Image (cartoon, rainbow, N blue to C red; front, side):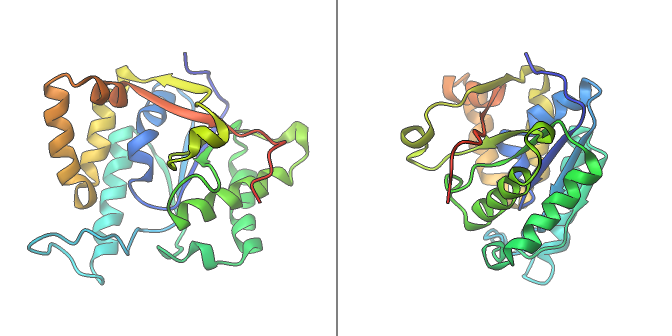
Length: 227
């Protein structure tokens, strides 16, 4: 059962970050009538996949990925998409206070009861971890009784050893087709993965079906210190 929220704020660094593990949850909240804001910090302009033969170059890829992000938002039914204008693969070098203010401004503007982002130190990519640190720091500065709940995604190889198993599991089977449409919207980065995944789903592969129908999160515990 997915709890109804006042407003959900999703914060990720790259187009397609939302697609893999949160798009079913976003779609479900929207279907429930919960306002959802998705703040995407960059346009993923340093994405590795340029195609073979190339469909884009470094100058044109940002526009490709921007359109894909807009298409993904439409697939989820999301209307409040915010592109924050930072540069891919540079977030770890941004000033800490600048990043914290960016997140604080988003929270003040949207007044969410729930924020969804990555877990600091357990999200593999430097941009993921930089985003997660800023989110945690911004919320930590809020009075305890005003803090939104923070759901995080962690997938480093040592995640379970560090923080155990996810404590929130959303059954999103009803939004499965929207999840697939969101992933397919990011075709420049997902096309090869999706060909394999759709084959596995057609074969009713248990792990693929589990991935499609469930999304898992860690509720951030404020007594933990990631630094």
